[in-house]
Amino acid sequence: MRSKSRWPLGFSFIVAILWSPALGWARVPPADRALPNPPPAVVGSAPVCLVGSENETVLRDRIIGRGHTAEASEFLAHFQRSNYQRQVPTQVAAVNSPENCELDFRYSPSVPPQVVRTVMNTASALAPQRFVRSQCIQRAMMRLPNVAGVDYYDCETDSSMPREIRRLPCVTPEMVAYTHFTVNEAINCLSQPGSPIDAQLLFRKINNESAFAGFIRNQNGTGIGQLVSFGAREMGPGGRGHGFLMERMQRRGRACERFASVASRELALTAANSQGERSVRTCQLVGMGNGMARNMLYSIGLFLYYREAMPHNAERLLHQAGLGDHPDFLRMRDLLTMVAYSREGPQGMRLVMRQLRGRLNSRMSYTAFQALLEGQVPYLAETQRRFEDVFGQEEVDCTESARRL
Image (tube, rainbow, N blue to C red; front, side, top):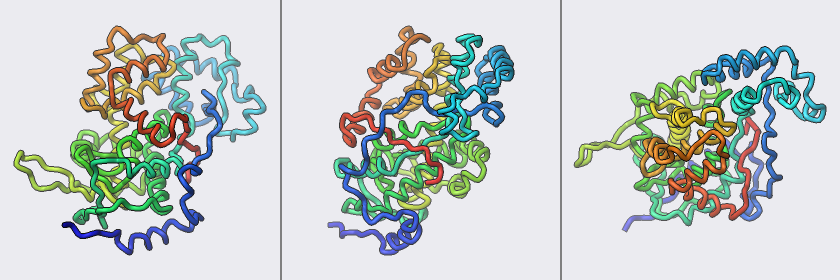
Protein backbone atom coordinates (compact mmCIF):
# COMPACT_ATOMS: atom_id res chain seq x y z
CA MET A 1 0.00 0.00 0.00
CA ARG A 2 1.29 3.41 -0.88
CA SER A 3 1.84 5.78 2.02
CA LYS A 4 -0.10 9.02 2.15
CA SER A 5 1.72 12.00 0.74
CA ARG A 6 1.36 15.67 1.53
CA TRP A 7 2.30 18.89 -0.21
CA PRO A 8 5.75 20.13 0.91
CA LEU A 9 5.42 22.39 3.93
CA GLY A 10 7.56 25.02 2.26
CA PHE A 11 5.24 25.27 -0.73
CA SER A 12 2.33 27.01 1.01
CA PHE A 13 4.70 29.28 2.89
CA ILE A 14 6.58 30.40 -0.23
CA VAL A 15 3.45 30.89 -2.32
CA ALA A 16 1.77 32.85 0.48
CA ILE A 17 4.74 35.19 0.73
CA LEU A 18 4.87 35.71 -3.04
CA TRP A 19 1.22 36.20 -3.73
CA SER A 20 -0.90 37.00 -0.69
CA PRO A 21 -0.07 40.76 -0.59
CA ALA A 22 -1.49 41.17 -4.07
CA LEU A 23 -4.54 39.05 -3.42
CA GLY A 24 -6.17 40.47 -0.34
CA TRP A 25 -8.34 37.33 -0.19
CA ALA A 26 -9.35 35.72 3.06
CA ARG A 27 -10.81 32.71 1.32
CA VAL A 28 -12.10 31.43 -2.00
CA PRO A 29 -15.80 32.30 -2.33
CA PRO A 30 -18.19 29.40 -2.79
CA ALA A 31 -18.44 28.15 -6.35
CA ASP A 32 -22.07 29.17 -6.73
CA ARG A 33 -21.20 32.78 -5.82
CA ALA A 34 -17.78 33.03 -7.44
CA LEU A 35 -18.85 34.44 -10.78
CA PRO A 36 -21.71 36.94 -11.15
CA ASN A 37 -23.70 36.85 -14.33
CA PRO A 38 -21.91 39.10 -16.84
CA PRO A 39 -23.75 41.67 -18.93
CA PRO A 40 -24.62 40.44 -22.43
CA ALA A 41 -21.70 40.87 -24.84
CA VAL A 42 -22.04 43.46 -27.59
CA VAL A 43 -20.87 42.05 -30.90
CA GLY A 44 -18.16 44.14 -32.50
CA SER A 45 -17.82 46.45 -29.48
CA ALA A 46 -14.06 46.00 -29.01
CA PRO A 47 -12.30 49.27 -29.77
CA VAL A 48 -9.74 49.22 -32.57
CA CYS A 49 -7.16 51.95 -32.99
CA LEU A 50 -5.42 52.28 -36.34
CA VAL A 51 -4.51 55.91 -36.90
CA GLY A 52 -1.05 57.10 -35.89
CA SER A 53 0.08 53.82 -34.38
CA GLU A 54 1.98 50.68 -35.25
CA ASN A 55 -1.37 49.00 -35.88
CA GLU A 56 -1.80 50.93 -39.13
CA THR A 57 1.33 49.27 -40.49
CA VAL A 58 0.28 45.88 -39.16
CA LEU A 59 -3.11 46.29 -40.82
CA ARG A 60 -1.61 47.19 -44.18
CA ASP A 61 0.91 44.35 -44.02
CA ARG A 62 -1.73 41.78 -43.16
CA ILE A 63 -4.01 42.88 -45.98
CA ILE A 64 -1.15 42.80 -48.45
CA GLY A 65 -0.06 39.46 -47.03
CA ARG A 66 -3.47 38.05 -47.90
CA GLY A 67 -3.03 39.12 -51.51
CA HIS A 68 -5.14 42.28 -51.26
CA THR A 69 -2.54 44.81 -52.37
CA ALA A 70 -4.99 46.86 -54.44
CA GLU A 71 -7.58 46.90 -51.66
CA ALA A 72 -4.94 47.94 -49.13
CA SER A 73 -3.82 50.87 -51.28
CA GLU A 74 -7.38 51.95 -51.95
CA PHE A 75 -8.36 51.71 -48.31
CA LEU A 76 -5.33 53.58 -47.00
CA ALA A 77 -5.74 56.37 -49.58
CA HIS A 78 -9.39 56.83 -48.56
CA PHE A 79 -8.46 56.48 -44.91
CA GLN A 80 -5.91 59.28 -45.14
CA ARG A 81 -8.35 61.60 -46.94
CA SER A 82 -11.21 61.08 -44.51
CA ASN A 83 -9.45 61.59 -41.16
CA TYR A 84 -11.61 59.13 -39.24
CA GLN A 85 -10.36 60.04 -35.81
CA ARG A 86 -12.34 63.29 -35.82
CA GLN A 87 -15.49 61.38 -36.77
CA VAL A 88 -15.53 59.04 -33.79
CA PRO A 89 -18.88 59.40 -31.94
CA THR A 90 -18.56 61.44 -28.75
CA GLN A 91 -19.90 58.72 -26.48
CA VAL A 92 -17.33 56.24 -27.81
CA ALA A 93 -14.42 58.68 -27.63
CA ALA A 94 -15.32 59.48 -24.03
CA VAL A 95 -14.82 55.92 -22.80
CA ASN A 96 -11.75 55.01 -24.85
CA SER A 97 -8.26 56.41 -24.50
CA PRO A 98 -6.61 57.83 -27.66
CA GLU A 99 -4.73 54.60 -28.31
CA ASN A 100 -8.00 52.68 -28.19
CA CYS A 101 -10.02 54.83 -30.57
CA GLU A 102 -12.77 53.15 -32.56
CA LEU A 103 -12.76 52.98 -36.34
CA ASP A 104 -16.31 53.03 -37.66
CA PHE A 105 -16.82 52.32 -41.36
CA ARG A 106 -20.39 53.64 -41.31
CA TYR A 107 -18.79 57.04 -41.93
CA SER A 108 -17.23 55.86 -45.20
CA PRO A 109 -19.94 54.79 -47.66
CA SER A 110 -17.62 55.37 -50.63
CA VAL A 111 -15.31 52.52 -49.60
CA PRO A 112 -16.25 49.40 -51.64
CA PRO A 113 -18.00 46.72 -49.53
CA GLN A 114 -15.37 44.07 -50.28
CA VAL A 115 -12.68 46.41 -48.95
CA VAL A 116 -14.70 47.03 -45.79
CA ARG A 117 -15.06 43.28 -45.21
CA THR A 118 -11.37 42.62 -45.70
CA VAL A 119 -10.22 45.49 -43.53
CA MET A 120 -12.69 44.96 -40.70
CA ASN A 121 -11.87 41.25 -40.64
CA THR A 122 -8.20 42.15 -40.22
CA ALA A 123 -8.82 45.10 -37.90
CA SER A 124 -10.73 42.95 -35.44
CA ALA A 125 -7.46 41.15 -34.73
CA LEU A 126 -5.97 44.42 -33.50
CA ALA A 127 -8.38 44.85 -30.60
CA PRO A 128 -6.76 44.78 -27.14
CA GLN A 129 -5.85 41.29 -25.95
CA ARG A 130 -8.23 39.83 -23.41
CA PHE A 131 -7.32 37.47 -20.57
CA VAL A 132 -8.90 34.63 -18.56
CA ARG A 133 -10.77 35.61 -15.40
CA SER A 134 -9.65 34.12 -12.08
CA GLN A 135 -13.26 33.40 -11.07
CA CYS A 136 -13.65 31.11 -14.07
CA ILE A 137 -10.41 29.29 -13.27
CA GLN A 138 -11.65 28.75 -9.74
CA ARG A 139 -14.98 27.40 -10.98
CA ALA A 140 -13.18 25.04 -13.37
CA MET A 141 -10.96 23.73 -10.57
CA MET A 142 -14.07 22.91 -8.55
CA ARG A 143 -14.82 20.31 -11.25
CA LEU A 144 -11.66 18.34 -10.43
CA PRO A 145 -13.35 15.60 -8.34
CA ASN A 146 -15.31 14.68 -11.47
CA VAL A 147 -12.17 14.11 -13.56
CA ALA A 148 -11.66 10.36 -13.63
CA GLY A 149 -8.63 8.29 -14.51
CA VAL A 150 -5.93 10.79 -13.55
CA ASP A 151 -2.97 10.73 -11.19
CA TYR A 152 -1.85 13.72 -9.12
CA TYR A 153 1.80 14.67 -8.76
CA ASP A 154 3.91 17.10 -6.78
CA CYS A 155 7.23 18.34 -8.16
CA GLU A 156 9.52 20.54 -6.09
CA THR A 157 11.54 21.52 -9.18
CA ASP A 158 11.36 20.66 -12.86
CA SER A 159 14.41 18.40 -12.49
CA SER A 160 13.15 16.43 -9.49
CA MET A 161 11.38 13.06 -9.54
CA PRO A 162 7.58 13.34 -9.37
CA ARG A 163 5.92 12.41 -6.10
CA GLU A 164 2.44 10.95 -6.41
CA ILE A 165 -0.27 12.55 -4.30
CA ARG A 166 -3.03 10.17 -3.26
CA ARG A 167 -5.53 12.84 -2.29
CA LEU A 168 -6.77 15.66 -4.50
CA PRO A 169 -5.15 18.98 -3.46
CA CYS A 170 -7.48 21.63 -2.06
CA VAL A 171 -8.38 24.56 -4.30
CA THR A 172 -6.75 27.32 -2.29
CA PRO A 173 -6.60 31.06 -3.03
CA GLU A 174 -2.85 30.70 -3.62
CA MET A 175 -3.34 27.90 -6.14
CA VAL A 176 -6.02 29.83 -8.05
CA ALA A 177 -3.92 32.99 -8.03
CA TYR A 178 -0.77 31.27 -9.23
CA THR A 179 -2.61 29.47 -12.02
CA HIS A 180 -4.39 32.67 -13.04
CA PHE A 181 -1.09 34.52 -13.13
CA THR A 182 0.75 31.84 -15.14
CA VAL A 183 -2.01 31.39 -17.72
CA ASN A 184 -2.35 35.11 -18.37
CA GLU A 185 1.38 35.80 -18.39
CA ALA A 186 1.68 33.17 -21.13
CA ILE A 187 -1.17 34.81 -23.06
CA ASN A 188 0.46 38.21 -22.64
CA CYS A 189 3.80 36.84 -23.83
CA LEU A 190 2.49 35.21 -27.00
CA SER A 191 -0.17 37.73 -28.04
CA GLN A 192 0.74 40.38 -30.59
CA PRO A 193 -1.00 42.96 -32.81
CA GLY A 194 -2.77 41.27 -35.68
CA SER A 195 -2.70 37.81 -34.09
CA PRO A 196 -4.81 37.70 -30.90
CA ILE A 197 -5.30 34.76 -28.58
CA ASP A 198 -8.96 33.94 -28.00
CA ALA A 199 -9.01 33.78 -24.20
CA GLN A 200 -12.56 32.41 -24.13
CA LEU A 201 -11.66 29.56 -26.46
CA LEU A 202 -8.47 28.92 -24.50
CA PHE A 203 -10.46 28.71 -21.29
CA ARG A 204 -12.80 26.16 -22.86
CA LYS A 205 -9.88 24.09 -24.12
CA ILE A 206 -7.99 23.95 -20.81
CA ASN A 207 -11.19 23.42 -18.83
CA ASN A 208 -11.94 20.43 -21.04
CA GLU A 209 -8.50 18.90 -20.80
CA SER A 210 -7.33 19.52 -17.24
CA ALA A 211 -9.79 21.77 -15.37
CA PHE A 212 -6.72 24.03 -14.88
CA ALA A 213 -4.98 21.46 -12.68
CA GLY A 214 -1.25 21.83 -13.20
CA PHE A 215 -0.49 18.67 -11.22
CA ILE A 216 -2.31 15.94 -13.14
CA ARG A 217 -1.19 13.29 -15.59
CA ASN A 218 -3.02 10.54 -17.43
CA GLN A 219 -2.57 8.49 -20.57
CA ASN A 220 -3.76 11.41 -22.72
CA GLY A 221 -1.35 14.08 -21.51
CA THR A 222 0.45 15.86 -18.71
CA GLY A 223 -0.20 19.02 -16.74
CA ILE A 224 -2.42 22.05 -17.25
CA GLY A 225 -2.39 21.88 -21.05
CA GLN A 226 -2.40 18.06 -21.13
CA LEU A 227 0.69 18.13 -23.31
CA VAL A 228 1.84 14.84 -24.78
CA SER A 229 5.56 14.25 -25.23
CA PHE A 230 5.25 14.82 -28.98
CA GLY A 231 3.77 18.30 -28.45
CA ALA A 232 6.35 19.26 -25.84
CA ARG A 233 9.23 18.11 -28.04
CA GLU A 234 7.70 19.93 -31.02
CA MET A 235 7.92 23.25 -29.14
CA GLY A 236 11.12 22.53 -27.20
CA PRO A 237 14.69 23.06 -28.46
CA GLY A 238 15.23 21.03 -31.63
CA GLY A 239 11.50 20.74 -32.38
CA ARG A 240 9.86 21.98 -35.58
CA GLY A 241 7.80 24.56 -33.73
CA HIS A 242 10.60 25.85 -31.51
CA GLY A 243 11.85 28.42 -34.02
CA PHE A 244 8.32 29.77 -34.41
CA LEU A 245 7.94 30.02 -30.63
CA MET A 246 11.28 31.76 -30.10
CA GLU A 247 10.63 34.25 -32.90
CA ARG A 248 7.26 35.07 -31.37
CA MET A 249 8.84 35.57 -27.95
CA GLN A 250 11.65 37.74 -29.30
CA ARG A 251 9.11 40.06 -30.91
CA ARG A 252 7.40 40.50 -27.55
CA GLY A 253 10.62 41.28 -25.72
CA ARG A 254 10.10 42.04 -22.04
CA ALA A 255 6.59 40.56 -22.04
CA CYS A 256 8.24 37.12 -22.33
CA GLU A 257 11.05 37.59 -19.80
CA ARG A 258 9.45 35.23 -17.28
CA PHE A 259 9.49 32.40 -19.83
CA ALA A 260 12.91 32.91 -21.40
CA SER A 261 14.74 30.30 -19.32
CA VAL A 262 12.14 27.54 -19.61
CA ALA A 263 11.74 28.10 -23.36
CA SER A 264 15.43 27.70 -24.13
CA ARG A 265 16.25 24.87 -21.70
CA GLU A 266 16.74 21.43 -23.23
CA LEU A 267 14.08 18.88 -22.33
CA ALA A 268 15.23 15.84 -20.35
CA LEU A 269 13.79 12.53 -21.54
CA THR A 270 13.11 9.23 -19.84
CA ALA A 271 14.98 6.06 -20.72
CA ALA A 272 13.65 4.27 -23.80
CA ASN A 273 10.88 1.73 -23.23
CA SER A 274 10.61 -1.69 -24.90
CA GLN A 275 9.43 0.01 -28.12
CA GLY A 276 12.34 2.43 -28.05
CA GLU A 277 10.09 5.40 -27.15
CA ARG A 278 11.24 8.16 -24.82
CA SER A 279 9.01 10.65 -23.01
CA VAL A 280 9.53 14.10 -21.55
CA ARG A 281 10.11 13.80 -17.81
CA THR A 282 6.95 14.57 -15.85
CA CYS A 283 8.29 17.35 -13.62
CA GLN A 284 9.20 19.50 -16.60
CA LEU A 285 5.48 19.82 -17.36
CA VAL A 286 3.87 19.49 -13.92
CA GLY A 287 3.68 21.43 -10.69
CA MET A 288 3.92 24.99 -9.47
CA GLY A 289 6.89 26.78 -10.96
CA ASN A 290 8.78 26.02 -14.16
CA GLY A 291 6.63 22.97 -14.90
CA MET A 292 3.37 24.88 -15.21
CA ALA A 293 5.08 27.84 -16.89
CA ARG A 294 6.66 25.61 -19.55
CA ASN A 295 3.43 23.66 -20.01
CA MET A 296 1.36 26.81 -20.52
CA LEU A 297 3.91 28.40 -22.85
CA TYR A 298 4.24 25.28 -24.97
CA SER A 299 0.48 24.66 -25.00
CA ILE A 300 -0.38 28.13 -26.32
CA GLY A 301 2.64 28.10 -28.61
CA LEU A 302 1.57 24.76 -30.08
CA PHE A 303 -1.95 26.07 -30.68
CA LEU A 304 -0.55 29.10 -32.54
CA TYR A 305 1.82 26.86 -34.49
CA TYR A 306 -1.09 24.69 -35.65
CA ARG A 307 -3.07 27.84 -36.40
CA GLU A 308 -0.63 29.76 -38.54
CA ALA A 309 2.80 28.18 -38.98
CA MET A 310 2.83 24.41 -39.57
CA PRO A 311 2.79 23.33 -43.27
CA HIS A 312 -0.97 22.66 -43.38
CA ASN A 313 -2.08 25.21 -40.81
CA ALA A 314 -5.64 26.37 -40.18
CA GLU A 315 -5.14 29.71 -41.94
CA ARG A 316 -3.90 28.05 -45.13
CA LEU A 317 -6.68 25.47 -45.12
CA LEU A 318 -9.35 28.17 -44.84
CA HIS A 319 -7.79 30.17 -47.68
CA GLN A 320 -7.74 27.03 -49.83
CA ALA A 321 -11.45 26.54 -49.05
CA GLY A 322 -12.26 30.10 -50.22
CA LEU A 323 -12.93 31.42 -46.71
CA GLY A 324 -9.88 33.67 -46.38
CA ASP A 325 -11.93 36.87 -46.71
CA HIS A 326 -14.90 35.72 -44.66
CA PRO A 327 -16.01 38.34 -42.07
CA ASP A 328 -15.64 35.66 -39.38
CA PHE A 329 -12.31 34.33 -40.67
CA LEU A 330 -10.56 34.77 -37.32
CA ARG A 331 -13.18 32.84 -35.37
CA MET A 332 -13.28 30.13 -38.05
CA ARG A 333 -9.50 29.89 -37.91
CA ASP A 334 -9.47 29.34 -34.14
CA LEU A 335 -12.29 26.81 -34.23
CA LEU A 336 -10.58 24.84 -36.99
CA THR A 337 -7.35 24.87 -34.96
CA MET A 338 -9.22 23.18 -32.11
CA VAL A 339 -9.75 20.22 -34.45
CA ALA A 340 -5.99 19.58 -34.20
CA TYR A 341 -6.64 18.24 -30.67
CA SER A 342 -9.09 15.60 -31.81
CA ARG A 343 -8.19 11.93 -32.14
CA GLU A 344 -6.61 12.47 -35.57
CA GLY A 345 -4.26 15.17 -34.28
CA PRO A 346 -3.08 18.07 -36.46
CA GLN A 347 -3.87 16.11 -39.61
CA GLY A 348 -7.48 16.14 -38.46
CA MET A 349 -7.76 19.73 -39.73
CA ARG A 350 -6.94 18.62 -43.27
CA LEU A 351 -9.18 15.61 -42.95
CA VAL A 352 -12.26 17.51 -41.82
CA MET A 353 -11.81 20.22 -44.47
CA ARG A 354 -11.55 17.49 -47.09
CA GLN A 355 -14.73 15.86 -45.77
CA LEU A 356 -16.56 19.20 -45.91
CA ARG A 357 -15.41 20.05 -49.43
CA GLY A 358 -18.36 21.32 -51.43
CA ARG A 359 -20.30 22.31 -48.31
CA LEU A 360 -18.19 25.36 -47.46
CA ASN A 361 -18.69 28.72 -49.16
CA SER A 362 -17.92 32.38 -48.54
CA ARG A 363 -21.60 33.21 -47.88
CA MET A 364 -22.10 30.75 -45.02
CA SER A 365 -22.42 32.06 -41.47
CA TYR A 366 -19.99 31.28 -38.67
CA THR A 367 -22.79 29.37 -36.92
CA ALA A 368 -23.24 27.14 -39.97
CA PHE A 369 -19.47 26.56 -40.15
CA GLN A 370 -19.39 25.69 -36.45
CA ALA A 371 -22.27 23.24 -36.83
CA LEU A 372 -20.51 21.47 -39.70
CA LEU A 373 -17.31 21.09 -37.72
CA GLU A 374 -19.07 19.93 -34.57
CA GLY A 375 -20.93 17.35 -36.63
CA GLN A 376 -17.61 15.89 -37.76
CA VAL A 377 -15.45 16.34 -34.64
CA PRO A 378 -16.65 14.88 -31.30
CA TYR A 379 -13.88 16.76 -29.44
CA LEU A 380 -15.67 20.08 -30.04
CA ALA A 381 -18.93 18.78 -28.56
CA GLU A 382 -16.98 17.37 -25.61
CA THR A 383 -15.46 20.79 -24.95
CA GLN A 384 -18.93 22.31 -24.84
CA ARG A 385 -20.16 19.63 -22.41
CA ARG A 386 -17.26 20.29 -20.06
CA PHE A 387 -18.06 24.00 -20.17
CA GLU A 388 -21.65 23.19 -19.23
CA ASP A 389 -20.36 21.04 -16.35
CA VAL A 390 -18.99 24.26 -14.87
CA PHE A 391 -21.61 26.86 -15.82
CA GLY A 392 -24.70 24.91 -16.85
CA GLN A 393 -26.52 26.27 -19.88
CA GLU A 394 -25.37 29.82 -19.17
CA GLU A 395 -23.05 31.43 -21.72
CA VAL A 396 -20.53 32.99 -19.36
CA ASP A 397 -17.84 35.35 -20.64
CA CYS A 398 -14.65 34.17 -18.94
CA THR A 399 -12.48 37.00 -20.26
CA GLU A 400 -11.35 40.35 -18.92
CA SER A 401 -9.39 43.19 -20.43
CA ALA A 402 -6.94 43.89 -17.58
CA ARG A 403 -3.34 43.44 -18.70
CA ARG A 404 -1.57 43.45 -15.34
CA LEU A 405 -3.23 40.78 -13.25
